[in-house]
Amino acid sequence: AQAAPRLAAHCPFRSIDCSAMAAMDVDPIPALEAQKKAHPDLAAKVDELQQFFSQKLYHQLTQALFVYLASPPLVAPSAAAELADLFDNFIKPLENKLDKVKFVQLLSIITKSQPADKALELIMAFEASAAKLRESNYMFQALKAEKQIGAGQLDSAKELLDTLSKEIADAYEVDALIQSQLHKTNALLWKALGRPQDFFKSSILYLSYTPLTSIPVEERPHLAFEIGVSALIAPEEFEFGELIQQELLESLQGSEHEWLKDLLQAFSEGQFSLYDAACSSHKAKIDATPELKSNLDTVLRPKMAALALLELAFRKPKKQRRLTFAEIVEHCRVGAKEMEFLVMKAMCGKLIRGQIDEVEQLVIITWCKPRILDMTRIDLMRERMDAWAGQSDLLLKHLEEMTPELLVA
Image (cartoon, rainbow, N blue to C red; front, top):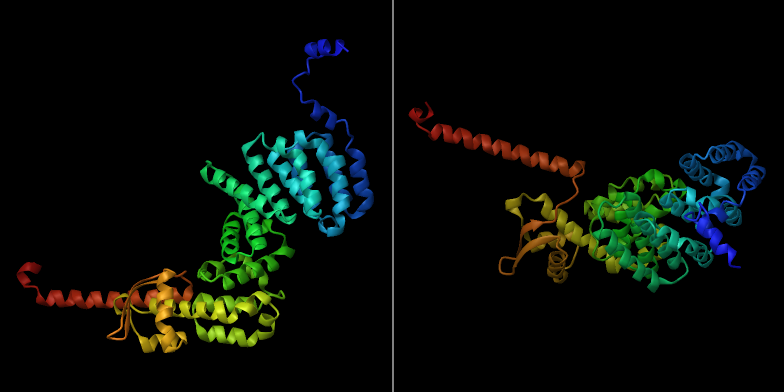
C-alpha cells in the first residue's frame, strides 16, 4: 500500500493526465467497423476516418468527422442512439487529441438529436476540460445554455447567457464562430420566452457572423420564416430593409413559406398597395399562422402606416418635407383622429423628427430615418443629384453673367 507512492514519484510519465491515458485504452476501430457495416454506402468515408486515425492526423480526422456526421443517415432524428455509441466508442477516447473548440462542436452535433435533459447530462462531463481554453469555454457555455433552454431551465439559461455575453463583449478578438453560437443561443432563449423583438435582433446578429453554407439547407426556409414573422409582429421593429437583403431569405423561394416574401417586401417598401395585395393573395396562409393572424390589426397595420409615413417623408426633397394632415391621412390610410397619434408614435420610434403645426395643419419633418438603398431608392437619389447638378449649372451661369469681365480675366 505504501509502494505505490514511491513508484509514482519515480515514474517518468507522472505529468501525463491519467484520465487521458485511460481514455485511449479504448480501441476506436471496432466503432468504425460497426459504422461501415451499418452504412455500406459510407464505407469510403469510414475508411478515411480510419486512415487519419491510424496516421495520427488528428486535424484531418476532425474535418473528416464533420463531413461524416453531416451524412443524411446520421442527421436523421432516429440516429440519436447510433451517434451516442459512435461518440462513446470513437470520438470521446480522442478528446485529448482533438482541438478543444472542435471537440465542443462535435459535442453539439452529437447531442443535437438527443433529448435535452440527456444531452445536458452528457456534455457536463466535459465542462472542466473545455474551461482550460478561453474559446472552448465560451463555446461550451453557449452549448450548455442551449441545452438548458431545451430542458426548460430558462432562468438558468438566461443568467448564463447574460454572463457569457458580457464576457465576450469585454474580450479581445473573439472568433466569429463563437459569436455565431452565442447569438444563435440567445435567439433560442428569446424565442422560448416569447420576445419577438429580441429574437429578431439576435437572429440578425447570428446571420452576420454565420456563413450561409454552415446552416443546413433543410433548416434554412424554416429559419427564414421564423425571423421574418418575428420582424413583422415585433411592435418596435422597423428594420425590414436589412432583413430583405439577407441571403437566407432566398431559401424561401420554392418553399411552403415563399408567400412571406411578399409581405416583407411590402413593409420594406412602406407601400400600402403591396401590403393590401399580399394580405389579399395570401389570406389563407396568414390565417394559418397564429402569430400573424392575432397581430394583424393590432401590430401589422399600425406598423405599416408608420412605415408608409416614413416612406412619404423620405421621398420628399429635404427642404420640402412639409406634409399636410390630409396628405398623411390619405397616404397612410388612417382616420383624421388617428393621424396625430401616428405621427407622435413615429417620432417616439425615432423614425422621424419634426413638429406638428396645428394651426397650419402641417407636419414639418426635419429628419427621417435612413433607408436601406435598394435600386428604387438609388434611382430616386440619382434623380435628386441630377436636379441638384442642373440647379448648380444655372447658378454658375447666373454668376458668370453677373460678374464683370475684369474680374473674370
